Image 1 (tube, rainbow, N blue to C red):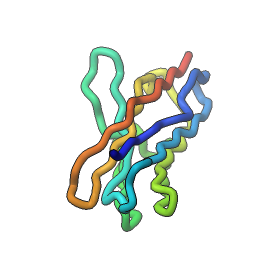
Image 2 (image 1 turned 180 degrees about the vertical axis):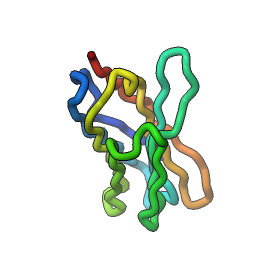
Image 3 (image 1 turned 60 degrees about the horizontal axis):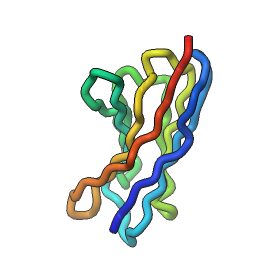
Image 4 (image 1 turned 120 degrees about the vertical axis):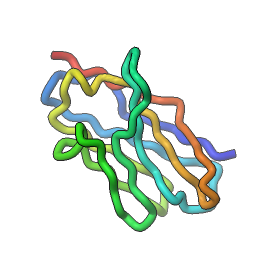
Length: 116
């Protein structure tokens, strides 16, 4: 049973930084894609960034220039370095991954709160 476990969320002041981590357990394969989504209260879940197994990345416009996604394929772990955080970045951040047959997995979410 594949599980994605996020860590690193918390409360930070505007302009600060956080680093999210997501470790996958229960898998022996490399995920095709690993990434991050977020959902703010009253809003739909949206893509933040994802990275393919070949290293290609895709960022939401809101994340470009401030957030950096990275992966450690040997550890099946994905990271999200978030800098210059803004109050509008406040949301629950979810780890997401697609397996070798494009089966989809989600983490339980980690809260990020940015105070003004």
